[in-house]
Image 1 (cartoon, rainbow, N blue to C red):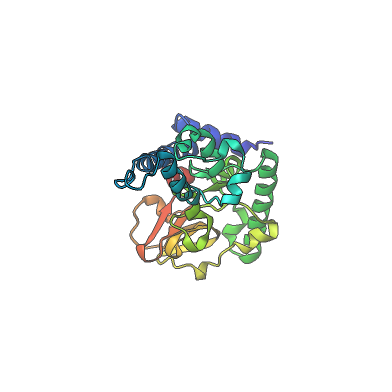
Image 2 (spheres, helix red, strand yellow):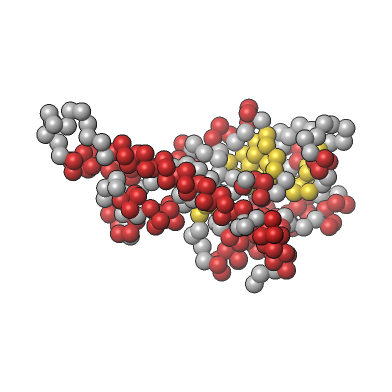
Length: 271
């Protein structure tokens, strides 16, 4: 069931953009990903200078280079054998000929879509309940009384299951070797688990900002951490935007020694 709030938000998005910000991001990421893979496929198809001396055929070279591509897709040889034939990469050329199906199977457009609509609706409702009840229990600030879950993030949770942007699948599969920032790692927890993602304002390294509450939503290389925070710029401090002094939900990326980025809404985040 689509709420009235969601209808208003979608109508607002569409009144400012020909399509919503999320498909724009996906189009941009998938184009970038295809260019990167196409270059690798081109290089893989080039014969080595000593191929004739070694009597290696193009088929031999393709077989030697295939493990490299499976590693990029984070696929083991045993997993590869058991895969759907539509997603199986038998030669480097398969990456481009099967590209549309690989995009969805491996999230090459910057998002994942693995759940059914019913599962997504159930999980985001439980997540929202956990976050809001958790926030209410942590603060007696009068602002908390009328606080609502961020509407644009609610819409995003109804469309996709995670938001990871550009990058090779194997670099986002394991935190210890992560080479990209995953802004939203998705909902893989119960209502109780959602409460565990809440953050305490005094624990956040955000100098010059007042934070009422929020939660950690993603992570990245070199201890990058992503948040959804209800916050505002402290009084008397310089602001990049006049709206910085207002209380509202913001999307925050703490890039550790490289600084902190604030985004006023999901559209600005995805731009």
